[in-house]
Length: 311
Length: 186
Image (cartoon, rainbow over all chains, first blue to last red):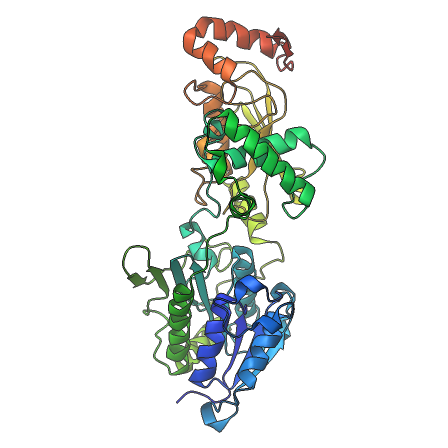
């Protein structure tokens, strides 16, 4: 039987976070905490189903917790399911706060935040002489692809161990192509951001949220596109902003699949069906061509900078 | 969670037994990118014509690299590069620029460098050593097919001997096509 005292911390209340919170609540985890520092925006509503139009401008964590608490679900050991919200930056959580949880599930969108929480948890295990060990289940979704990693700090591969398997965060193009032989609208924008901006404004860095900067980018891209005979009709404000922010559309079904896998792992850990040494701790999903998933054991790196024992 | 708790107990007992204790040590508060950088620097194996200055690495995350090629078109010139490492290293490559203004087909007059491993072919398995070897290669073998400085590339392609003279003159601080270059030979 699972321990009714199980408590789970959910990091992120966005696309993955909403799914994870819903699953955990239905699985009957009685104590759930959620941390998120974001505010609800209109563009979230298609997939972040715990939020409604009237919630725009409110903190995600608070609204998500309220929505689930209003359902009055009954969980393990007949305890009520209770979600507590923390509207704050997860890197500022204290060690004593983290220590109270049995498990942590993350649905984050940044590699930096994952690295931060991963190294905190590994340190917690080491510093406590293995008395504390809080498994981290990390979900990630990017367009039609996603992953789920189970990290048992100090015992199996940590997030840092698998860092070298990550694809580059931004699409980048050879500088020479971008400078002298641009063929794509992306090449034009890349040149303006990396070279021309610094030439014209050596004292300031580019900030797309400043109207004047963005207008500069739009005007110059049209000039440069015309110079290299690239179709200028593509350079709409939304297209240019999409390239600058490197936007990949979020897909609701990917979030659902990845969150389901994360919560499966929660169940396996809770019901002692997870063998730390032999279970597959790394799962990838690709919905781009059909539906492909694969799970394997990612081994610990002896020279890992976070969990390696050489430090 | 029972299985995990049992494993933890076993590990704690192992640790309590001094014979088996491996030093896990306290991990310092430094970020993962800084740890990785330190490791990179420890494992460096540089040829004698490359010097690095890591004095402003901890404070500003800037590494100064100085390369003096001992052969090729750029023999004898002193090339000072600056590599800026962000907290995202090694997921993202360092930003490397050449400080003096130099006449080179793959380096523009602002010091931007066209080197594949610094952009599209970067991977987290590459390190400071690979970056330095890449820069050294670029100085030994300028590449005319992927130009960043078009006039230099054109000259290298059409007449390597003219290109050689132009490089020699530019490295002494001369002017080419009305453009002054920095003196980098003594």
